[in-house]
Length: 388
Image (tube, rainbow, N blue to C red; front, side):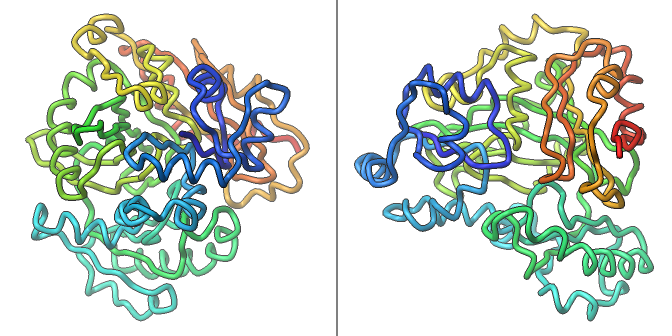
């Protein structure tokens, strides 16, 4: 079963739904996405009845914007509780507290942020919405003075951020302050099968421009990354799945590893793989269809895949728009110019920059020994591709 919502539905997801012919909830996004096709959508009443008859069947949404509808309509089982367990970072920290007994975290109401003294915090630390998405409202704190600046920035950002996503996806009433987790950062797309066993679909390395960078500008995947981290991440997923009693459940989890077997969980995003259908990178890199894998219980043969892509890195880069830019004044975007940064672009996705602070997503292949192409993107000023 599928529930489609904003912000983005990819061609791969549309093709997969058409191929599998599983129920797709009839809503505005689904009607717009599948218009001019013969695909028959399932009315809400029939969708709810079909789900209620078999609570164990796989249910996927491309976006956490569907959480509110799930809360209100698919509450016959414990799915809403499990979703909330991961969406609310404070609840998740409580779930894994015994795994990380010395980890500092503190939940603070938005209006009380300026009452917290920087001297009370384990600097460096990070502050972010307890329920958040897409690095919105996230700030890295590296000094006492940095804490004061972060609070001021959050206070000025809230009114601009709040309208972008539904409250169940981005809640700005409560923030969580956490100590920084050291090490390399990775994002893992995975699902739990009918027996509760985790299956890894892809592992993405998160590239940063600097130590205080919290953006999602660039992610990469390669067989080298998969081979190095698959087993340790699988063990972590097994422990989380056991605690949360997960079955037939897709997740996108962000973790850090110090390379010595010490893992720290940043957050877990329920009901989906990488947002904005970025999970499709697995298809370009390894021929893995994430949606089909989850729906049909397919497990990637990583041993077989690992020998096919040596020397290659597959990347996703977001064409971000700086918050200082007045998006209402953008008249056009130089997509060709943006695309020209990459020696082997695989797909360019044009995004409505009036609605979101992004003008494009691009997938690209680069040689593993020529990462400069991607490193340049981390520091690039994308404003030059915007026409006013």
